[in-house]
Length: 299
Image (cartoon, rainbow, N blue to C red; front, side, top):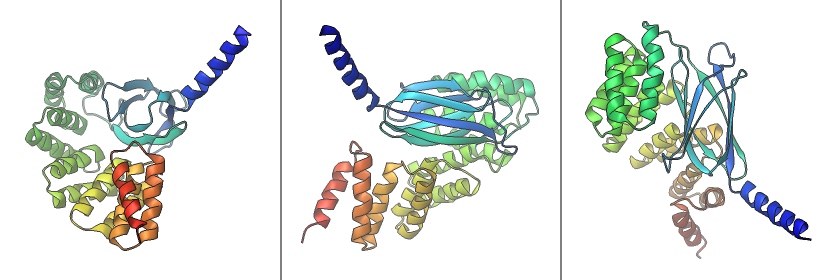
């Protein structure tokens, strides 16, 4: 009887645990050949707490998986020697798996030795040692001044310590060296958005998506800047594209609900706001969305 009782308790415990987490699964491939990339470094960071961070590597099929994740938004950074690094933002749903395909673009450094050292330097950056990372990437730039990856990472380090002028300078140099490198293009957009120069931010977000940026957050930030300038029709198109890339990106539904209210399409607004609340009831905008829905139902 005691054994049976403990088994029942354990079963309920495991069942409860199973529905409180989610997972992420994906493949890393060469953008040109489509071949899987083994031993790519994947860093998964929970956006609400940088202390929740996981590092893993792709297997020989380019596959990676991480379970036991708190539902929410995560930033995934993928790095591999000989390739341009890539970042994606995904929403891990409750009791489900977020799936993502990463395609890396090959890049041959003019100084292969320094390219190998960059992995250690990026580890320092990922560990939050920004001043040390700046020193390391400055050394790497002196050895290989034509490498856009080093400028991007040093710019990211400057951005982390709040030196946006130097960050902007490095991001711009990175784009100058490789015009289709989406990470620094997106980063420039973010800096201008922080400065509330939305026109300039839009210019770079637009350039990022046109250069092949598939990160849902880039599309989201692009749409928000458009909304801030009252360009809601354009913002709607960007958000619809975002959902086609990541249907679990809940904030997009909230923004679409707001846009449809402005367009006078109440039924559509209700649909998107209800979906937003259902998907992400703990979101900071969920209470606002509920209040809007209640006001829309008033006679």
